[in-house]
Image (cartoon, rainbow, N blue to C red; front, side, top):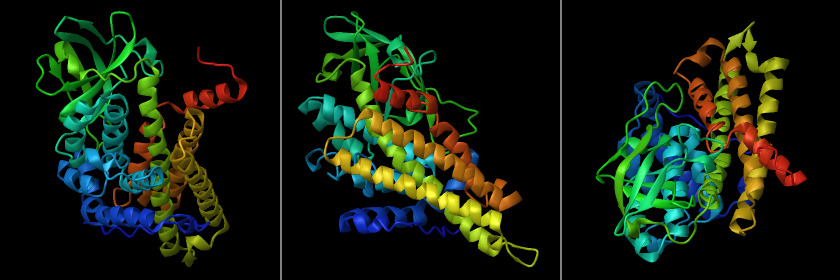
Length: 392
């Protein structure tokens, strides 16, 4: 079992800007990950299986709905605390962060923000403890970057709704207890529905053959004349803006999480470069290696500053969709570049599972695509600064 030697880089002393509570939350998560998850994550990645035994621990560190108020079972933390948790989780593995992010931002958030009091009290406490796990159904086989074109639909049958359709690439789907599903009503308006496991006609086949996010459970959500009780409709927001609001929260978490993956790759590369001897001296002493390392820590520091400011804006309720898109796009691209450079520094050892580098690289190839592709986020920024949408 590999020992987790991670030491977090903080070149601009950002810890000075964090509160004692922020640091306690982050350090508690880091300690738990080093003890409980890092020693097993490579094995589960190889097996293409999510380690479900970590769910209670994820809940205990606040990994499910960190910003959900205490009255509904959440920790009631601020947005920077949420970001720091996502950073620590993805430092270990993007799949671990995905599981937490989906539960928090894509399941608990819409129930809290768009649901009624009865729905909040029924679902949120059990989701916060991990007793129930959730998934989020938006992407379809033929509608990814254009979710408004979805075909999944429901009809009013008097005493219930009848739901039909399919969702694809859904994290947590194979073992979810509830799913927040987005579908069109008979007028073509998008609404959120809470679908529970056990409802007749609802199935969640697992997606196999993934070469990325292997330690995360991915599947489909299939609806074949599923009878959904009318009280399971989220009443307080509808239209495409409702699911996109959830994605804002999730993308914010990704912006922090990607930094964690980059930090892990950099820390490993720095340590390896000091230990690896070639031509009679550590490879860290060569100019080209120092160039790689210096550029890596520079880009990580820039991303840290970008995301910390975004966290402040989120706390103030001022962060815009476009600002979140910029951070998600920048930070994931940065993390991919850092991972690739780190792999080169490790040489041939970088492709083995003795180090986390190739796992991060493969995972990030999914992260750069999901919840808004690299190019779509670029066009969101372009639309924001020009006022002209280029993807319609």
